Image 1 (cartoon, one colour):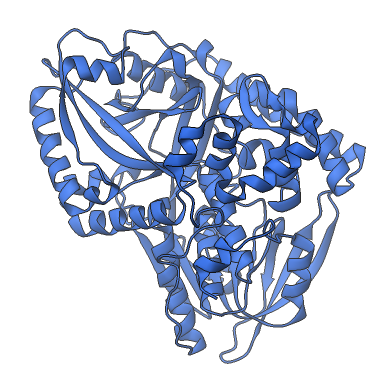
Image 2 (image 1 turned 90 degrees about the vertical axis):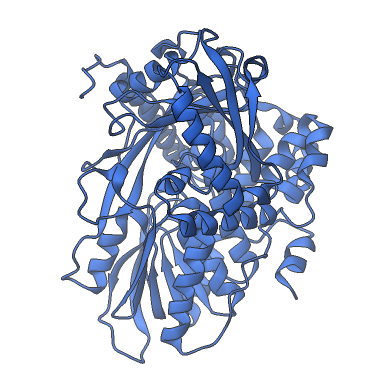
Length: 562
């Protein structure tokens, strides 16, 4: 059956059970074991499964718990590459953008970007606007046209309709162009579930602890440490012919399990985002504005993006040498973003307006350049001792990165199977009409915009228990039925899994998420049979993490470096 028909003919939620997957993984040798449950790893699992390979995937934490839940949530071609005259990269990125837009219409939406133009150069002056418009002409020609909209110039009055809080003095107009956006963690989990639908075996909270030495032509033993929701651990072994290292920022550590003399290739760059109520900005489009110097090279551009009743402001681009498992936005970074935006608006955003933040690391390939902002976002694929490592890259091209990695896997296995993911829909996407659904409004539109055609399964949960049809907090639109769906069908195992990644409550309104945590814990007890003591521990840990964020943001401001 074609991949599209498999997705379109769903009559029940995807069978996405961790225990079943682990039992199947250990029952017979795998063709390929994927290490890493971010967007790259799950895309590799999907590609390999559609080629008929026996594939397993292990993730030491939760799916998308690293970079794939902490990105800027953009699917884009990369205007910076047009500026660098890297037209091939932009063409490829825009092609992949369109493919993802068509494969996951419920998760990838068209997004207008507004570039205001001012008489003076304090914001974006005429000379910069002229150069930027030339970039947009090239952007559209290279592939931006595929989205169905071309950039256009607007007068001052129309520009203010898109963002009425723009500083009007000296405003001469604006440029409007188009890219797309997604909920990155939701997309990652959906790709993982699509891979499972096509036969892949995936497990979170399952760490690769050791790899037996590589011997050509023979299966390799992978030693796994599995952590249950109650904190208990168990050891398992899996036999696999090939290993794919897709661990992102952590990929150097995985490589050393196979190649002890491996030299580090990843150079992390930190990006942070700050969330404020949308009414404080009121921009209908994604507003592009100049970034003050200090945390993004010599300034550069930043943006503010609407997300429901909130909007997020980002992003920084700075080297990072701290703990990759504990990346946070600090007050200095948050203040810089707010101050940069305030230079463009008539409103005055302060730290008191911030309802949430997130921070993540870009897994850039170290080329020896001094500034992370100058490092390429291109990916690199290497093969050594039966391990295929795919590193670097960005969310937009995750499908093609996976295709190239699985091509290498097939070479090692000496099998000839072509890639089938180019047009394969993501679960919930087959036959989904985003425009028609959005026009309906109400609960159906909300659920469909997150689950696509699977929204009916979430609706079934809400109808079975009216209490689950209520929002988890007055400040947020997400329903308790979504929490239950996440536990039953999306392999959510902890309070943080649900309130940070299955539902972005932690990012949009951290205090509201903390208030919802005990009830989320009660549902985990009811659905998974976890002990009250374990749930108390999880709730306390989640609330402590929110409190720590609050303390970070309240810390005394430091001078922004030049």
